[in-house]
Length: 172
Image (cartoon, rainbow, N blue to C red; front, top):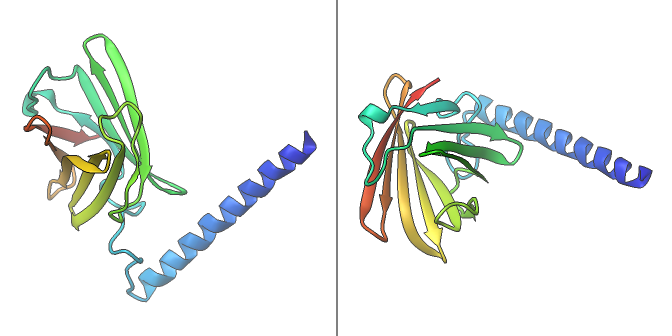
């Protein structure tokens, strides 16, 4: 039992040291004017970070509009975590996945209609997610911030049935 506890402590110490080193190297790169490898990334101060609530009246869906929906983007040790909580009818569900803004494929939540997601930054106020099913692009979602950073527009295009939705979110 103690051997497992000591492994846990060791993993926690290594993870903390890695995060601290990563933060220091990132700060040094910023101080020198260098962007992190792989282009601009989402940082803790990035305006995408936070919780966003769906504005049902301003959003359009090909089917039923959810009772409510939130998007949350947060920084985690491995990159970013995206959590979507939705109430549709009387059912509430959550999807969640981790990713980095580097155009590489990351596992999607099992409840999603895609197997992997990848993100790329288009500009300071725009991220684009590509969802793949069985290595084929199945959907794209463009997340675009308003100039004041208070409104997030998510434009989703589903290729299989040629439908799209425009979801408007307000920052909480």
